[in-house]
Length: 416
Ligand SMILES: [Zn+2]
Image (cartoon, rainbow, N blue to C red):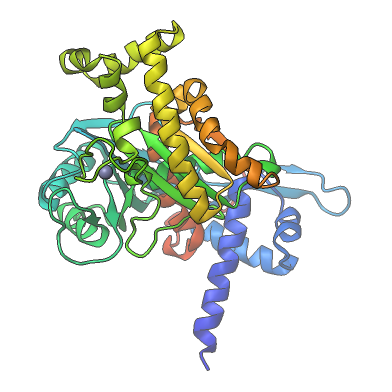
């Protein structure tokens, strides 16, 4: 028998349920929490008291008439009680943001130029440690450091203890430990994740918050910005695969004798839809090397809007390649939604005919199978949104990780 451990786990689970409800429906009454969670009112009262003692929830100053009986006070999340730090390690720069449990991203994060997502893990850890140190001040005693989530623009392996070779997948646990060593004052768990996984998660929730019937069981995500990457979500969770490498759509072969990819193979999707491949095909390579990739991408969009034949042909070819890759993905996963992120989201009007042409036979063969191709809505900050969501989820999953507040936010009339 293991009753004490079981009852502690049940209590953690119930605290999580109540905190998630209050976070999603703030402000709300205890009766609403009880109705929504299925917990009895007395339990909700005790659980809310625990969350208030930890400073995660407070009672609203204003009481509302509850219809009958005594007036009720509404409950509010205290987002600033927990600090979430998220870093996105892209190509050549690291962005760091800090936020609270509400998960809103500040307009301006801290940006530091960095060696990029590849190279020795020690160098990467040095750069991340320096960027976070610059961006984050030590928290006050009433702020609990919840998590640091680092999203890397390179594959992240969930297994293995050895530092990965240059260009190979990073070991998440190794890199997290190296970063934690460099930030002894941070006092919070460090998690290393893949940026496409985070972007996919954020886009999924942004899209799913619209109509319920649009929520898909299996979703594939593919993005093209500095590199091509992807992710697979099953019922709203990242499917990591055996090593953390599932959903990397960039290296799905779409042609037997296609151009050589940077990974060494031939005919990878990446060689057709990467920003560099498309800009090269349109004759924008010189502009890209003189003024940078952003200038080339802006020029490409201008050409597309003006109907320039080379630009239209390049996007048509990219659309066909993407359609072939999607065909492979749905053949294996039966995904019902494909979300296009990064620059692909802006290119959808010109990619769609090629994608549709490739998928027409499959659609005819399985006319009742749903398949939507959806542009992402979050732009280049999608990965940071997802990293923040992942960091918040640590507290939401186990509110007992937050210790009792020094000054419990218990009573009404206390300003946040
Ligand atoms: Zn490749």
